Length: 303
Image (cartoon, rainbow, N blue to C red; front, side, top):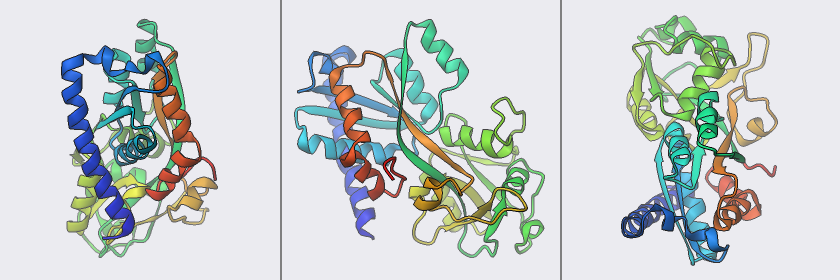
């Protein structure tokens, strides 16, 4: 296990404990008290919920921040970007992690409740297209990806691989990564596009589930955040179009914009959030928070 993997595992274990501790406290105190930082920046509790792509990153941020701010308790849970945004609108979480921009309907729902939403860009991410290590295909174009995930191309031999039915692995529809991939790959950037994932696609509950399935299925293909690519998982180069060069997903290619499947990551809050929340977000976008981004192999804002 690599040093980074160890750190991630430790973070997950510690964060799980923190989640349990926080939920115990929240049951006793109620949600209003759980966001008790309203009185100032020196103490309080923060609840963070949303994107599964970001959950390990959010957990490590929380752990590192509480080391130097032990008076602040931060609880992190996943569930998907849509789940987090809905919770923020309904007032059951302070911060919504999201791997996509808020939808028009979500903004309208927030406005209907008198909520002025603040969009905080906290990191960048490349979405890696992953296959089994034994798959001989090494690159695909955006058009080929669209045809594969919409079901027009169903056999690996049609894109340069060995004969074999392609097994599509997708996140569930409440995932921000699912929404981003559908809009930017299947519908070529059209938010109101009508192209859907093929009905044969297996909808999996987490990025880790896609990783696990891809590692053991020689015909599988899925998409995950850049931080999940390690070990025997094979990431494909992607071509923006037939005339472009194929680009490997890396921190550098996401930062310089040459990798065609990349995106910002967000933390949404309400205007007028408690000072504790504001301070925490300032730390995340500062040097210490962005160092954590880099350690977990996402892409920092500062480079």
